[in-house]
Length: 307
Image (tube, rainbow, N blue to C red; front, side):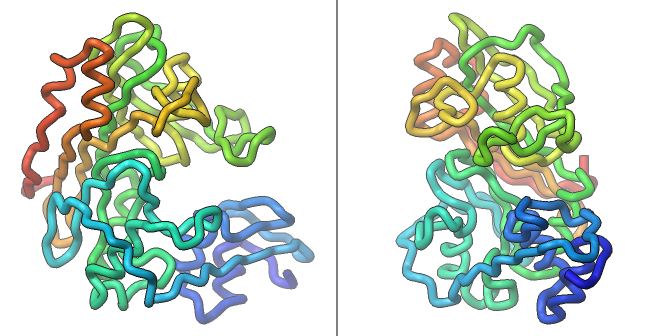
């Protein structure tokens, strides 16, 4: 690079056909490497630095997904779906052509999708492939910008349910531990002194026989945050092969409830009931009574003020 400065500004100047928002999404998805390493949008680029940008090639005419996804809430600005475990939110280089929420959105909402960048139409936030639960999609670029800004400013309320292998020492606490990319395994994140600030509040809903059922509220939005934090306190999510004891068809983590400021004003709370595989596992662990309250979805409700 002959220019120097903040990474997103340097790339926006170098690629005038790309919007600043798209540049920032490319950086967030680690499609931009500085001297061979993923970087943050605020990274200062020195003259002579090697900057590599990979532009996804996601065609509008994607193969049919065959997906039927449960829609929990929908209006003219956004929709909320109950994402099943095992489904990607957007295309991944490691799984080219795999079904994804983004591809389903393009297929079902083709007119709305045409207004977005091709690689992440409507996507506002994401869930890991094997995490189930509430996922928001914007139906207009303006709604996407407003919702993305709300997530960035931590104006959203996120609640997850997890079945864990292990019991935390405290029934209720905030885990405050920085998270960064593992130096030993690039697939993993880790608690690291050189990582980014991360906080997760949790409450033990039930515990017995070295297992626990938890409600977790991430106060920040780092990659794999809940999984990394719970593993760090000796209660990894059950079935988590990357951070826990595994093996399992998937890690038993569910995005149960999400509250956001609505782009048109007021607020929105959406709840997704516990999926069957988690209910069975939680019941088998002896926590049927505690899980019952989370087994039925609460109808989405608009509110006049954001909690």
